[in-house]
Each structure stands twice: as structure tokens, then as C-alpha cells.
Length: 422
Image (cartoon, helix red, strand yellow):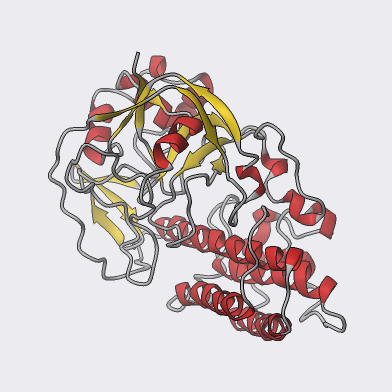
């Protein structure tokens, strides 16, 4: 989506095979029923994720650029288009769970068919815009790997027996439970946005200057224990802490804790990808909305960082953390020892910022269907940064702009506090 050096044919083919195989691997222990159910309109069935990511390569790459290519099934363009108005009509999003057919096996056959055609297509060598489009498709699929996990978690959370997606979690990192501290950052004119030298989504640019006042960021994410203090102090009962729209959500949906928290025999527990688990008080709180994050910050006498503040602070951090990979924990983990630097900037939880998802100065959507990827969603949503424990390892960068509506909670979303330094 931005200028990037073309990958060699062999490296692009290898990456294509790796990403596509990783998606299927995530579903290996799911039944056909697990992969068909849609637990809410914001979520999609696992089977649909498998098919839609395949639809992307078939519809946007193979069909228009590979003469003689025959689509696997003419009905699939209608069934598995997500929101691309320019490509044609599509099955209604809230009714994706009604697609009992095609079966899991049919969808896997669809993937195999398209993958074989893509392997032949890539073996002939591509460059320029086509190379960029394949790389976009792979990053798009990695996004759907995260959505697939969070949608499965939401679905399993509706089941009274609390199924486990991953039965044996890796042992959690133990925290020293050090108090939260704040790291200072200078004000002045800074540049943010992607520089165009590698892959980035169009919404990450253009690179531009911002003026920041001196500020401080918390050195770690807000923990479950700190969130429990907010709850016990009446945080969900005090309308003075909340934005008006947020308080309306609290009242209408009877919020009194983060999504997936359940009180049993006087103790809070939470649903996770490992089934129902005991809450780790030192781990980051997650599955909270922007409204909850903003109310907590107000209760704590702090605020949320702007996305510019977050990016300036993050750009020299090592992009390593608790991400999704083969033996990943798939749960936010407690911060490591305090070291005077920022911790947990990448992985664990997406961090709500105080910034609306709007175009950067000079932004222009790219031409064609892929121009619908981000630009048309720049209204009414809030920016998140940093990635989560369900984000594929290697997918994130300091300029990455995620975005969700402020009431949404089913993603691994958490909170980092900020304050003015002067």
C-alpha cells in the first residue's frame, strides 16, 4: 500500500506459504460447528475468515491478472466479499453464521485451489503494483488471524462449559509488582507516520510534523489489580467519570467489569483462549472499551496518550513482546522488572489512544478496490497502537494504526496512562 522494495520471487512464495499455512493451523482443532457459529454481528465465523482471505487473492489478484483463471465457485464472490462495494454485492455481515454450506472441507478445498493457482502465478515472477498487492493480501490475512482468535474467544465465552481453544498455556511471566512509574518525553516538533521504505497500510502516512507539549507515559499497562480498585471504588457507578456516550453504554449494557470477567463464589474469574481462568492481578487488564479506558484515566487523575505521543515514544523501542506465534501464551502477561524505560509497548494489549481515526495531512486513498481498505472507515472510530497477544509476530510496527468503535470490547484492548509534564 506504500512504496516498498519488491521481494524476491522465492521469498514472496515462501512468505505466502507460511502465512496461509498459519491460518489453517489455527483452525486445526476446531470442529465444523466451531467454525460456522457467529456469536455477534461484529464477529465472523472461522470458516468465513478462511474463505474471505482466500477470496482476496482470487478476486483482487488472480481473476484480473491471470488470463484463463477459472474461479473455484461463482457463488463465493457474493458469499465472502466483506465490504468492497466496488467489487459487487455481498452476503449480509450479521448473517455470516447462517452459512452452513459450504462446509469446512469445501472451504479448505477452496484454499487449496487458490493456493495452487497463486503458487504458479508467483513462480512466473511479479513486480511493482502486483508485488505490493500480494504483500497487502498477506498482511490482510495476518489481520484476520488475530480476528479469528478474538472471534473464537467471544464464541466460546457464550458456551456455559467455557471451552478451551488452547488447552495448555505456557507458564505466565511473574511480575515483581513494582508500582507504575512515568517516563518523560520532550515536547517540540516531531515527525510521525510511515517513511515509505517498507510495507505499511495507506492510513499510516503521509509522514508529517506534529507539535507536542512535554508529556509522560506510564512505563507499563494498567493491571487487573488496578482495574479492580477502580471497580471497588464505584468506577462503573459514577457518571461523573464517563463521557456521555460511554455512560449510556454502561447503563444500556449493564457494564460492571471488563468483558469476560465473571464473579463466582465472590471471586472474579475471566474467560480466555485457555477456558475460564483465575485473574492474574499483575497482568494487564484487557477487553475494555475506549469509554472504559477514558473513564479509568479520569478516575486515576491521568489521561490517554494521543497517537502522536505514543508513536514518538515507541519509535526507538525494540519491537518485541508477547505476540502470537506457534507456542504463544495468547494471554496478556505481567510486565517484567522495572528498568526506567517503557515496558509492554508492543504485544500484550492494543492500547487505546485519545485520538480519533482520521486521515493524516495529505492522505489520499489509493485507486481501485483496495482504496476501500482503510480510508472509508475514518469516521467515529478511535486509534489503538502496539499490537496484542493475538497479533502475529512480525506484523506490527511503531506507525501501525489500528481502529475500532469506542464501545467495542472483544479485542485484546488495554490501557496505558499519560499525563502532561508541564
